[in-house]
Amino acid sequence: MTSTVSQPVTSAPAVDPARWPDVARVPHVPLRAAVAGRLLHRVAARRGLRVELPGSRTLHPAPPGAPVLRLHHPRAFLHRVGESGLIGFGESYQAGDWDSPDLVALLTELATAPETLVPTGTQWLRRFYVQRPPSGELSTAANARRNIHRHYDLSNDLFALFLDPTMTYSSALFPTGPDPEPKATWNGLAPAQHRKIDRLLDLANVGSGTRLLEIGTGWGELALRAAARGARVVSLTLSEEQLVLARRRIAAAGQEERAEVRLCDYRAAEGEYDAVVSVEMIEAVGRPFWPEYLATLDRVLAPGGRVALQSITMPHDRMLASSRTYTWILKYIFPGGLIPSVRAITETAARHTRLRVTCAGAYGPHYAETLRLWRERFTEQSAQVAALGFDEVFQRMWELYLAYSEAGFRTGYLDVHQLLLTREEVTA
Image 1 (cartoon, rainbow, N blue to C red):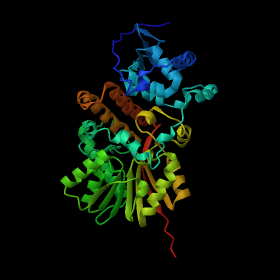
Image 2: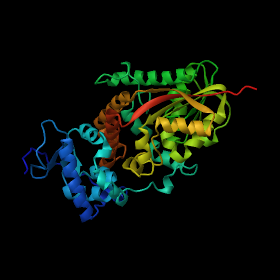
Image 3: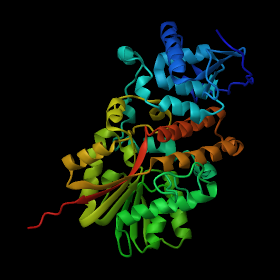
Image 4: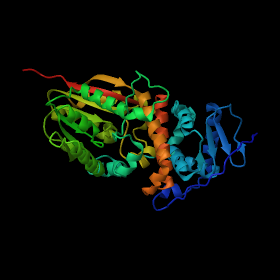
């Protein structure tokens, strides 16, 4: 039985098959599509979703205010999901097969206990559609620069459209205690980014004369604030776009003698430093290379030094479950990476280095608010994004990425931690 709804007619974006081959291609997998259809019925009923179909129909009754999945092209949606699961779900959004008037609300519902979406007895079906990450995206020394290029070298102008003036692309820290207010404001974002940076620098005891290594430059704001404290900063990046702008910003601030940015893989880091900081870099390293990454921090750290890391994290069991899965985020947004758990960082450091995690502070709700502000800014700037040469498929991809990430933090599926690692010094 179906009910009628008021549904606007929308046109699908034009998909360039040369640029978006898997978005342009609609697979034909009837049996798997039928399974996806049954799963959609189950998820909608159990999660209270309103699934709207063409012709002003709904899949089944839903409670008032239910999150909405609006299917414009149900057949394409089911065949994509049937073929490749969540990758197909994301590609279907890029193609315009489905939409939602409140994308974050829908994704938040789906991100709540995601392991319960598929019936326990059918988990074995995963092997028919779950892909393994391709070896060409493994973050080896040879591949890492290409992986970083695909995201961070898109365009400095693109990032400037939705980031605040500090050009900080990581979680802010709002001045509201453990949880931010329901609606943080855009005007408060830059101060909140400085608050985050300052807390990390304080954690590493960065001050006048500190020899500081930063792994992952971003666009230079942390290096600038550390240099303003009197530290001598060496910052490493693999992004050529970020390198150019970070150096320009450092020169404009008159800090060239205190802050140096190098195009360099973390594995090639040289020197000895009183402090090492790294903000949301370990996620790009990839699980096979966490030992080498943490061993590098240990190698360059001077006696008595401190390492301060900021990392997106997920529960350990979910990290293990996803560690060999090729996801939509890996395919289109962050190739080669994996979000770690705090336990994984702690155990890897203990097993492969002399470093020990001695402090860990979480503030995931602040990231949800940061992402909301970025997402709203990004969608407001759609005309400017298009003027930079990014088509509608790209824009829908980034809207989904930002909304998906926000939903992850709102449910607690994702978190963000600032971690302090120190070394137990051996005395003779």
